[in-house]
Amino acid sequence: MKTNKAFTLLELLIYIGMAAILLSIVAVIGINILLSKARLAAIDEVSYNGRYALDKISDLISNASGVTAPVLGASSSSLTLSTAVSSTNPTIVNVSGGLIYVKLGSATAQPIISTEVSSTALTFTNLGITGDPAAVRTQLTLQYNNTSNRAEYNVSEAFATTANIRTQ
Image (cartoon, rainbow, N blue to C red; front, side, top):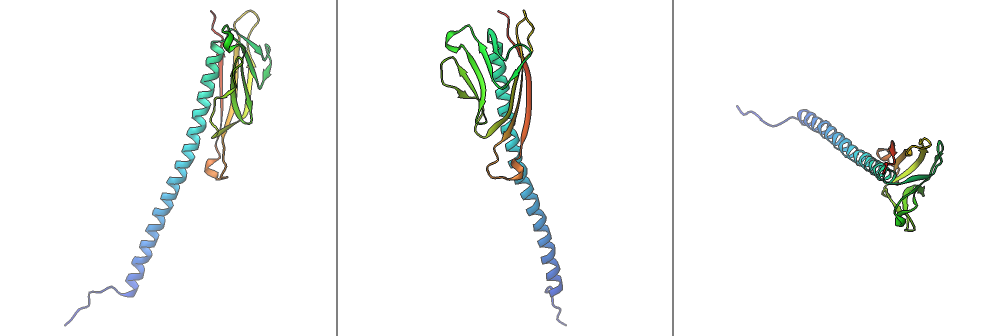
């Protein structure tokens, strides 16, 4: 008696169907990993630029000798600092075309954030009290420049800090 040890057509179709389902699941997981990686890269870029901009602005405020604009109690999208060093006096921080610029004295303004992100809001508030060293609150919002219009690149984050002028 001879027995046939081959698969039947029905068994073959079941195995192919199971393999297709398994491959579909693996493909969906792989696509989700790639999309998550892209989103995390955008989040990292926005966070890095926001922290760097706040650190740079805080350092400029701390080393300044005074705040020219905004005046006490006022807010502005531009910050003008006076410094004791003539080559950096005045120091101006402002936003233009979505980039945050720092201008030291008569030098050319330099961007302090990358072109991968843009500033959608920048506000300086002079919290100083007459007779005391000035305190300036800096608030900014950065968003990732989503040139490809992909949903995973829609990243925006708000940052804030307050810095005081050091007493000499």
